[in-house]
Length: 490
Image 1 (spheres, rainbow, N blue to C red):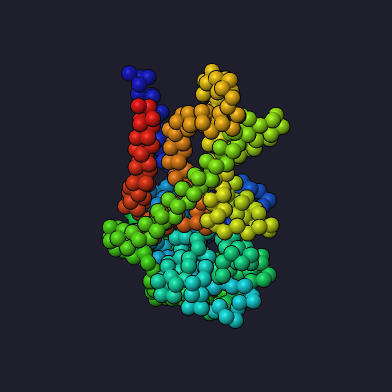
Image 2: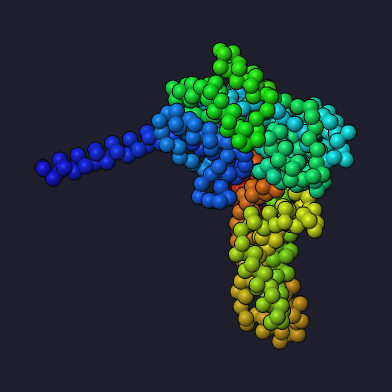
């Protein structure tokens, strides 16, 4: 009994210590991929992060008597992670929006920014507003106020929104002529123009927004404590010092701070496509966009699989029938493609080759998926060709068939029957892997779903709709291939 009591006491003590350690920390979530001046890996010490949001997290932690601990979360997952309680507060250039206000506990704004258009200097006199960009491609980040503004402009002016996963490539693609303008907040726009001298920021603001911290909806008490800390930092100049350090202080901030520290209300946020409406009501509104994205997914998958079959067949035939040098070269190519990630191959095709050849996003996605899957298809076809009994091949040659006739009339048809099942599996896999092409600006089904989910603040309904669409696309194909295979067996 004594030993059991000691063990129970030890467990209780360890639990208490763990709980105390957790309360002594302020876990804050952010995305280091967002880069300076928000959150980025310190160039001198990649093990730590720096940026104005890092210093605001430090300010909040000190006010609460805690130690800040950074948790890396992808930008588009910050809302969902906040709702789950994965961290205490999210700080990563997060914009206030009606959807966030309705679903999360949000701090008072700590920075006011303006959404501005960036264009090539040669177009700066003709492309001044969204109305001037009719039928033109305008780049932005998904799940942002800028994206919502572009969706509204798409309906009103026919603007074509192009979404990116980071804030660097929209400006490089603008300089290269792949897009006609970029709409983002001026913090990012200023940095983008400094990196690309041929670009110009338009002086007129398209909209005004605010950066806020986000917390789980049941964390309102902690949010209120943070609001008090932020207001005090506005009064005593600590927030101003942080933004001056990062060259972000401007004339917009004193007016915001004066409103918030003298009992005034925040400036109202611009209306966005994401509001506090029911998720199913939002689903009805987003359904046409999801169907369009599903169409892109199907078209891209079918064309990519056709390319993969053509290239894979040629590689398989070359490895089975070609001379030794060709066999070695083709084998090396297959291992290179299979040994590197598809995501990396897409980046190289779209961004890496931009200085040599500027591939459109859809064509780069088609080429990337086709080349990647061709390597796997070639192995299927090679093994299927080699599985045809040697006796049949020798009998055909005895009868005077040429090598091409043997391949076309005897070996090829039998190999196709053997390869059909794995080919079907590969097509279903390609259908799902097409979701990766969103990194090179192609808005397919999964990307459109993630934008939908981020804008309504929940993955339940969008995720269910997306899964249903993928099943509707893949199951008929599997059944069709099964019927063909069954018929061939008979």
